[in-house]
Structure formats: structure tokens, C-alpha cells
Image (cartoon, rainbow, N blue to C red; front, top):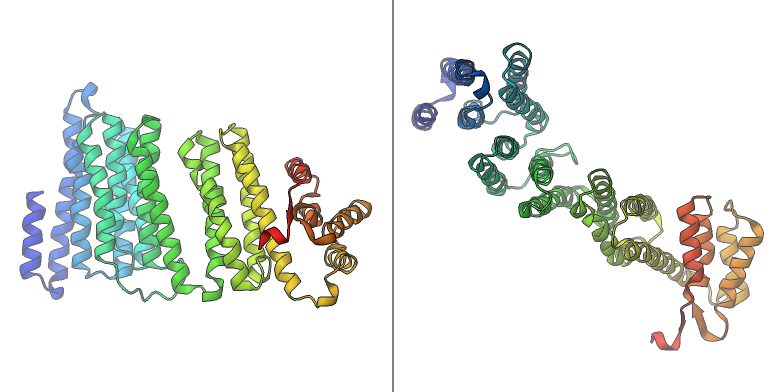
Amino acid sequence: MFTFGIGTVWGVLKYRPDMFATTEPFLLLFFAFYLCIPVFYARRREFSQRDLIDSTLVFGMPLAAFPLQAALLDGARMPLAWSALGAAVVYIALAALELRKLGLKLLGFSHALLALGFATLAVPLALSARATACTWALEGAALVWLGLRQQRKLPRWIGYAMQGAAGLAFAYGFDIPTDPTPILNGQFFSAILIAIGGGVTAWLLFRSDRKAQLTTAFLLWTWGWWWLACGRDIERFAPVHRETDFVLLVVAITAAFGAFVYRRLDWLEAAWPVFAGLAAAVPLVLLTAIDNGGPLESWAAGAWLVWLMSMLFALRALAVRRHAQLDIAQVSFVWIVDLCVSAELACAAERLPASAMNSDNLAGWIEEQLGHSPVDPDLFRRAVGASAAATEEGCLDVHRLIQPLFIVLFHAGDRLGRDLSLLHCEMRIEVSIENLY
């Protein structure tokens, strides 16, 4: 590392862009030297000790060399992306040689991991992502893997520190972005790669020890960077009156992914986004209603449909793993759908003439709105009648009023849908209109 330190000092003090043609070969030569040294060292050791590798040489060398390459290229996007892709090709070729010919299993896996990291870097670097933050995040996850594999604390703690350093590097370089494309921009990909590094670290710790305290911390770190990436793009590119619709989409996607991980790995903390999605849905009902004139109007209807499908998937995942809070999640889901549909009916009622606000006309209006749905006619008419009866004598039975919409939503034959409909039918909470004010 002293060699690269001297090179860095010289570069800061003496390097000029017109010296690239004479400087780049020396950087490549030093890269090749320090790439081969761990291989020669491992081959000279006894067979039983070949899996003991020097993590400083294996992971520290690219960590030092690649920022120097970025400095020589003056941060140029495409040349830097091609450099990352070239490094990935070199590392994967070396890993194949080590695994197939030389019998260096751990070193081969380490180089394969670096190849994957550099290949992953190529795309965001082409989109002007921050090279330092991205490299540190992925290298940090790789060091955690190596430390757990070798049962050594030092590489693990260096990996943890590099995760934090990646976040600091991103914050230090945070500025007003000029990329014109949502998602396909450097700032989004930088934050996503930091999130991926944190997520991989959390998974490695969870796989090693299910009770590891740092697992939860890195999982929260992952979700935080995911939300920063998505929130920043929503703020930059979404129209103001559509921001809550996109926030709802991100909530739904996050909950579905968390449920998927929980179901596959039986990772209890991974299910937290499901409950966060249920909690966030309550204010989002109000916000989407304000922005769209009703929570089920315009684009918001599509966002709520995605949320509905996401939560049905999540509830299924919780049921498969017999989550302890499944009952709470199911009841919360039903009440949120109640709230959303009730808010939509309230917004629709504001657009009705005063003459329509009696039981007969209201029932006819509901039937006109929903009567073309593929629902059993007799069952639908009985539900409409129940809704009309609920408006008599100043008493509003919220659940019977919106029962027609539950029939439309859940009459597709799905078992979970029928169960939720039955659960909803059993709820008989009558609220006096006078008591609401």
C-alpha cells in the first residue's frame, strides 16, 4: 500500500492530463504485480494452508487502484465504466484459473466476488455514479464475507467501516444532479449500490448467526438507502400531484420484497416492511384523496391496486411462516381497505347532487357504478340493499355500506379473498352520525 501511497502523492502534486499515456502503463503494471503476488504466495504454502489469504492485498489493492484510475481519467463516465468492466474480466479469468487448475478455492472465490463487484459497478459508473462510494460499499460487503469465511474479526470490522465510509462519501459528494432520466441516473444507482452492500452484509451476518445484533442495524441501513434512492427520484421527476401515488408504489414494492425474503429465509426482521406498509397506508389514503379528488381516482387507483396485490402476497407469506402478528396484519389490511373505499365513497358523495342523498337513490347510484362487475346479481342486490338500509334514520353502518365494493374486490374465487369478505361481513360496528361530530 506504500507504493500506491507514493503514487497518490505524486499524482496530486505533479500529474497533468497530458501525462496519461505515460502514467497509465505504470498503474496497470503495479496492478498486475499486486494481483499476482497473492497467487504466488498461496501456491508456495502447504496445501492445508492455501485457504489463508491476505485480505489487505486481495481486497485492498483494487480499493486503492481503482480510485487512482478514476483520478487519471478525471471522472470520465464511459472510460471509467470500461475500466471496471475490464477489471471484472481479469478477475473472472483469474478466478476460473484458480478454481479449476490451481486448487486455490478461497482465493478463487474472492476474485470471483471482486469480478462480480466490478461488473456491477460498470453500469452505474456509465451513468455518472460516484466511484468511491460504490466501490467501498461493495468491497465492504466482500470483506465481511471473507471475515466470516475465515472467522476473523478484523476483515469484518473493516468491512463494516467501509459501509459507513461509503455513505459518508456519498453524502460528501451529494450535489444538485443534472441527469435527466429517472432511475437511470448516477445518484440513484449510487444509493442503490450502497443499499445492496448493506443488504448483502445483513444477509451474511444473518446466515452466520441468526441472533447477531448488527444484522438488524444493516437491514435498517439497507432500507434507509433504498428509500433515499427512491424518494430522491420521486422528488426530482414526479409531478407534485403524483408524488403520493409513487410513494404508495414504493411502499407496496418494499413490502412485497420484504415478505418474499421473509418467506424464503424465515428472516423475521425482513417482514418489517409489511407492517410499515400497513402503517404508511393510513396517511396515504388521505394524501392520495387530496391529490386526486379521491383515493381511487386517476393514477391513485393503479397505485392502490398494486398495494392491494402486494399486501395479499405479503399476508400469504406471513401465513405460510405462521407469523406471530398475522392476525393484526389481516385485521389492519381489512380496515385499511375499508378506510380507502369509504374515503372514495365520501369523495364521490361530494360530487352527487343533494337529491341523490337518500337511500333509494344512493342504492341506485352504487348499483349503477358497480353493477357491470362480474358478480352474482342476487348477491350484489342484497349487498346494495344492505348499504341503502344503513343510511336510514341518521345511522351509518360503514361496513354494510361498502360491502358491494368488497364483493367486487374479493368475489374472484380466491380463498383468501373469500375469507376476508366473510371476516368483513362479520364486523358490525355501527357509528351514529351525530357521534362523529
